[in-house]
Image (cartoon, rainbow over all chains, first blue to last red):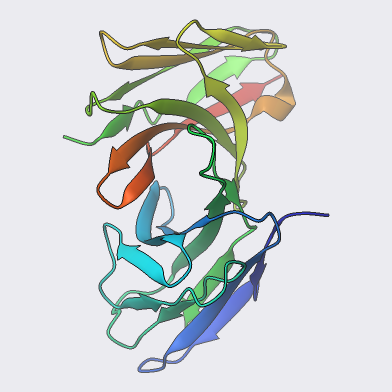
Length: 114
Length: 112
């Protein structure tokens, strides 16, 4: 089945530690996105990538980093500089060749601080 | 002002009721619009795209008014399974490419 796979589903981090969230898609989509969602809040864009080896900061990029070495993969690293990392992290992808395409989401990673 | 604004609700309605959600967007350059549904502790899932002429999918009708920068979603004959948060989404073309902007969502609770 084609889709977006995020792992792990749950992740616990000690303070001062970097962690990396995985996002893989086999939909042949060019664009990929990372969002953060806090309880009772909307989605906020962290980083996005329109093409391999290129990415842009979203609205809340501080304390996060990404890479896009392969079309299928867009990992997100939550660094120790992110002081409030506990949240639900969602990865999405989108085929941009036809305008107006919706995004498709993975089932998310819940990150908590120990 | 938020780029996409929705009434957060909750909307508590009886089963079988008709309910309407509204959404406004601030960027007139927005090109495409969508409604997503998000269940508790789950990822958002596409409910429907919103077309200029309005569109219908079963019990769901979406409408767009570009002049007023306003989008609506109508749900007829509500089911218990419709209980979820409904996210209004606008697609904006930026220097870095297309970017979807999400509203904070409207919560719907359908009750017996």
